[in-house]
Image 1 (tube, one colour):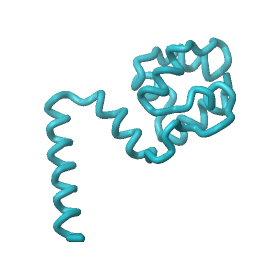
Image 2 (tube, rainbow, N blue to C red):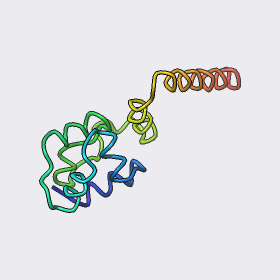
Image 3 (spheres, helix red, strand yellow):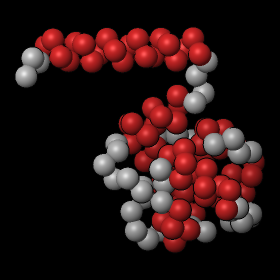
Image 4 (cartoon, rainbow, N blue to C red):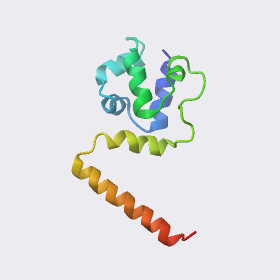
Length: 112
């Protein structure tokens, strides 16, 4: 386990340790113990970080290699994907309408 990797990950994602734990359905106190070296991270923790945020589990364990498995996906897109799971159906519909509006604006203002 590499404390520096966890800290760098939270910073890169722009989330607090607590928010990260909540977003992957882990206990915030457990996450704190992991980051502070008082508890060993479980394989489930690594798998959830990979599934939700696309984090390279080997990087989390050792600090070596790339932080994310898919380097073509931006941090912003990863954050949107992770936050989307927390939306209610009504909120998701509103976000979808907004994204469609943005896409339409992009198409009409840049007709390439």
